[in-house]
Length: 455
Ligand code: UD1
Ligand code: CA
Image (tube, rainbow, N blue to C red; front, top):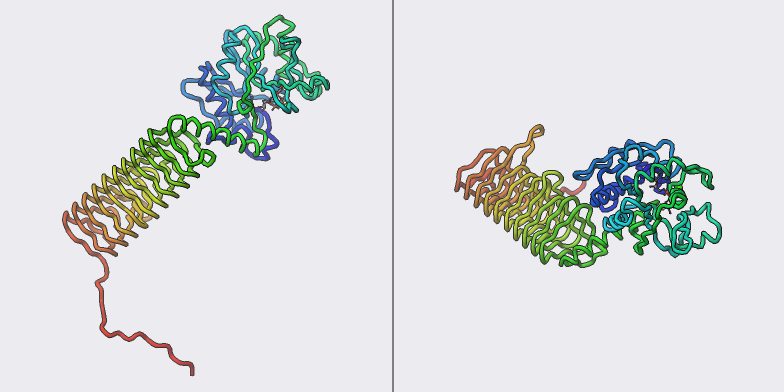
C-alpha cells in the first residue's frame, strides 16, 4: 500500500519515495518482499501515483505491477484494487510502503504460519498504543482488530497492536474484501475488518507477535524518518562489526547502498558510503570521507576528507595506494597499486599505473600515466579545448615538474622530464627534457622605482 498522502512529511515528494539508507522507503518494502520469494509485487498507488511508479524499480527476478487507488477510501479499499491481479492459489502479504525495516525472516515466519490456511497478523505490544488498531482476543483467540477511533475505553487499554502487516490466503482475502463496508468512525473501508469475517467463517486467525518495534515502525514525519535512518544505520554497522570491521563510532557511519568489506578494515568517524563500495583487506578509511561506487584494494589508505564518486563508470584504487587527505577521485579514475594521490588532487577518467604519484594540487583528466610517473605540484592536463576532450599519455618513469600544463592531445615519452612551468603542446621523445616557458632574464643591480613625493 502506497497510495496515502503523507501529509506530515510536508513535502512535494510522495512519502514512500523519501529515502532511507539511500533507497526509497517503498523500495525497501519491495526488496524485502523479493527476499521471501514473492511471485509478484503489486504496489497500490494513489497520491503522486506517477512519481511513485517512476521512482520504484523491480527487484531481480520479480515482477512489479502497479494498480491505482483513486480516491483513497481506506486500507481495505486499497487492497481491493490489487486483488484482481493476484492469483487465487497464493498467499497475499499485505505491507505498507512507509514501513521500511521489516526483516525478511519476520515475513517468512508470517508466511509459514499462514501456510495457505490461516489469517496471520503481525502484532506487537506497545507501551503507548495510541492510534493503532488493537488486537481484541477472547481467551487466546484473536476476535477482531478495532481501530483507535472505533474502540471502547476498555479496548483502548489493550496494548497489543496490529502492525499493518498480514499474510492471508488470497482466495479467502478476495471473498472477505467483497464483504467490507465503511460503517465506522472514519467512514473508511478497513482492511482490518477481514478479521471478523475470518472468525465468522471459522478460519484460523493467529497473531505473530514480535518484540522489535523498529520492524513495524512507519514513517510519517521527517523526525520519524531520521529516527529510522539511525536504526537502519546502526543495524548495518553492527552487521559489519560482527564480520570484524572496526569502526571508530558506529553512530557516525552511514551506508547508502552496499558496503562489502574484507578483513581488518578500519573506518574512522563521519564516513559516508554510497552506491556499491568494496573495501579490501586491511583498508583504512580516515575521518570525514565520502566514498561512492568504488573498489579499494587491500592495504590502501584513504586519508581524511577524501571524496570519491565513481558514479556509473566506477573508481578503482589499487593495493597499497595512499589517497588524500583532501583528494577527489571522479568517474573512471583507475589507480594501480601503490599510487599516491595527495591533497587537492582531482583525478577523472584517468589510469595511473603502479607507483605513479600526484601529490599536490593537480588535475588529471582523460590521462594515462605509466608506472612510477611523478606528476608535479600544481600541474594539470588541459583535456578540454572548449568543444572536445583529448587524452594525455604520460609513459613510464616520466617526471613532470611543478605548475605544468599538458595541452592534450599530447604524449610524453618514457623516462622524459618536463621542466617546471612548462606549457607542453607537442609530444616528446622518450628520455627527453622538455622546457616550454619564457626564458629567464636577470638584470644585475636592478633599481626598483621609488614613490614620487606629492607636489
Ligand atoms: C492501519 C490499520 C491499523 C494499524 C496501522 C499500523 C487499518 C484500517 N488500520 O491504520 O490497524 O494499527 O495501520 O500502522 O488498516 N493506504 C492506502 N490507501 C488508503 C489508506 C491507506 O494505500 O486508502 C496506505 C497508506 O499509504 C499506508 C498504509 O496504507 O502506507 C496504512 O495507512 P495508514 O493511514 O497509515 O494506517 P491506518 O489506517 O491509520
Ligand atoms: Ca489512516
